Image (cartoon, rainbow over all chains, first blue to last red; front, side, top):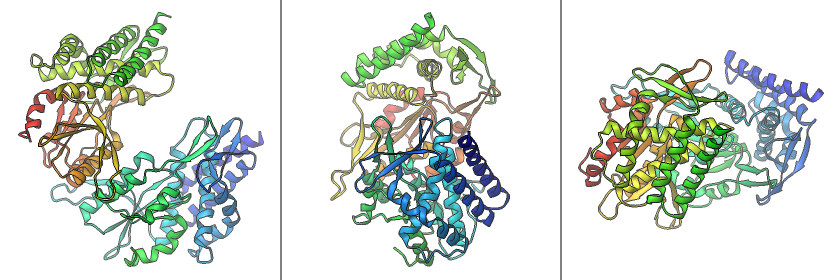
Length: 298
Length: 298
């Protein structure tokens, strides 16, 4: 019964997060406060759950899952989770004061992983049906808030396409952060995982490049993980399509950065090959962003 | 009980269709014969179901649905269905002999609609969970078979990307029909409905254009319908994004044709505006194809 109440608290905290986002704005202190509340109640729920180790087919990474009443969470990266959970206080305080300089990139990545994963793992178990939308929306609010604070402005979710006679045409997009005249604009798709749908990201970037000119929108995709759990065998794999990403990067558009919380090794290798795609742990965003804004970064 | 046996027959006929496709090939007479069997058993099942009228918010089109044991099919276009059902014999015989010249475009479209819809409507009711994959695969086999026969060759589902040092790179695609040297190749995505995923179609076309050169692959998307049933209110709407299609056509790649079985009015209008996208009833494929192959069609 106590577990049930804790489950309800997770749902309520999430609903309140969306309410506060709509009432204030995505970058407000109140949203940050509520992100912290969602994290807290999710942790309280997860502490009531059992954990179980998984057979990891992913080199150098171990995974476990949370379990309650025969229902399972998605796989959780053990190293990131145990490392990140000690950093939560510093992380939220750093976001609040817009200063994460005292944290290493690794610590930021793992703390942000724990914050993202806690709600997702809890809701995986709590929800009656397989629910992809709620974790996706939550992760979008989290990443959107972090970008809003760091860049000091709010995003839009569509851009106008002023195309001669088509003056009412708007393109719905993921987040667009417009830094103003003679500065770059950020195109920020946010996905818990990508799979075959990822071609949309490059295609949207292509439309933005076509409408506004190449180089005006910096595409920075933010992803959580590419893990897949086979429930029959209890094994975890990563689903990656690096060659297809290279084809998209060559033939559709050029993404400036792809950030991961749980970085897949096959995508990390895209940093060291040619054509190169800069795929980085998300913690590096805080170090990258100034040079990206200044236009001095690759 | 009789209904249950008829439901099982629909499932078995579909499974046999996939088996035959794998054992023979997508364009074989055996596949056509089995498509006819799937149609027959689906009809026998649907004749056991009740039908119910729907409130259509789509101008000049009426819809109904099949119902059994409180489970519903997708919306069925009344005009296409009642018109097409009289043409089934001619349609299958025309496909077999590769000669549909005695049928009007309208009759071909409506007959093909009934063949596609019969299985989809039956399986909508029979399947326990919402099942998008089975209808999608069935429709892909149907359209793939029709293209194979008409073009007299079999498709592949990936193309090699011979890109200097990346000589093992392959791009998975929808159907590719390669007519050989100095002739066009057809890129044929097949979807029961498109919604927001459709940008993939233009993005794949863009990659093909980039790898092989613009104009080498003619993109012809084949769709069933864009209807959506609101089960609460029993109303049918069409979900269309014509301005976004225009942006994709301008900024990503140029699709040569988009064929529909149940043509949405908002997409039909794209034939008469600028930039123009040729969106046609599927029956017109049989009239278009010779001039497309000869390269003499817009």
